[in-house]
Image 1: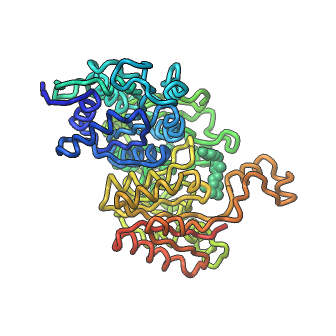
Image 2 (image 1 turned 60 degrees about the vertical axis):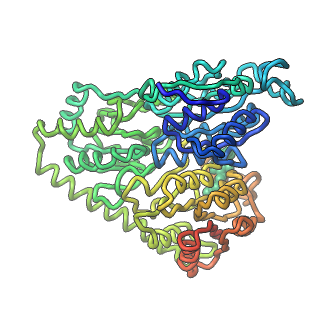
Image 3 (image 1 turned 180 degrees about the vertical axis):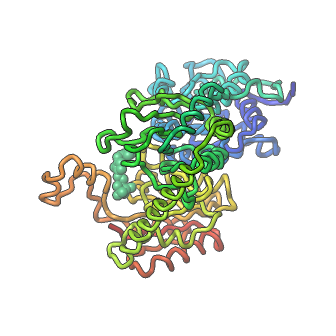
Length: 566
Ligand SMILES: Cc1ncc(C[n+]2csc(CCOP(=O)(O)OP(=O)(O)O)c2C)c(N)n1
């Protein structure tokens, strides 16, 4: 046991978070924060251990920063917001974190429990109306666990449990509400065990099911792998490469993480589409929507679909009818490694594997050539072509660049090879993630060049002033690439998909998706001391990227390029 002098439960909480290895405390406070603020003031003054405090002027940004940081480091950070208002503003970020399986200790103050009599009791007009009968109910659907801290004696167990649960697979945020009197409770010392009381759950697929799938794969004529989020665990990626190479199995990998090197001869682009119809075994690695039932016929009746992931049933989804004929639930890196080993005892058909490899390698070359062709076809277009602008950035990209993508550029133009090179907004798609996620990624890996590629709509959802302020305050030079098409294209195309010959198409009127006239977004970044440029000439795209990269890499200040695009 370690004993330290502390003045309050709030201070004990901060001591414990630091001892448990939490690096950052992203805060957006209110009247509930007094005990936390005071304890931080003391500990910063006395140079006592703390998770570094980061003031974030909007909850959307705070949640996305913690998520971006955790996506890079795989370690949970703390976000604390103000009672019910802060919880309400943060909920979108929480839904993204849940959907992206990002660990996080999300917390909020709670209005003081008592009307008078205790240190921290109510003393503000808001303290009555801000009470929720059950504050956790605001977010319970999106967290794995929630709790309200009672008088501080259980503090250590509660924090250890929160951190262990958020890191157990499938990972996702937990919620802790912290009443002001509980935080303000006066203490003289705090004793805690230096060893965390518990570890996260780890699960593995059974040896029998691994053997069954290895035998299936050995016999398969056309095995196909699809994945959207396997690369959340970077160590799973080389394992999938090994498995794919053993069988010369094609891999369709798009989604929210870098799951399989795009330059690999077995990488076949994003969604599998018609290739599924010919497959006899389909391995679905961490993919919530492996095909679109309304658009593709999907696999044949006789194909076997194998789910590989921490929860191949996606238990949180109310409706999901994709087959999981064989369920290899467990940490995918272990499952894939076990499959590779099990295949060593199977009899493989070397000639068939060789032929398959040649076929898919040729298809890979076609997919890459088609992407390049699409980009070059746009090289003279005005308004700018998304493929062309993306291609130009790809030509300048090095291994040390991280791209956080939220509808800004065309990800099929990028040839990512390592997990740290790409992160995408969750498939739950609560927009407003990109601005903050890029800041979190930069905080996690300051040596990398971090680029956020964001639609103009998504940029505005992300409360950009809050992000630019944090960037300036914390010296986090991120490059923002804003696709300024003066519209919500997603809403327009979704309308068109349901009404291809409808009134929108006939009249070219766009209620609820027209964002014109657009803003001079570059000036918003300039207002925060950053470099900002509007780009509308396709011949200037590369030079503009070079100027902006110079600003973030050499001048060490944030930059924003606003591409006037289609
Ligand atoms: C918080 C939130 N509100 C609304 C939506 C619905 N929505 C999905 S895409 C989109 C438009 C995004 O615009 P932009 O970033 O400019 O990209 P574009 O559609 O032009 O490609 C909207 C409004 C959402 N996903 N999240």
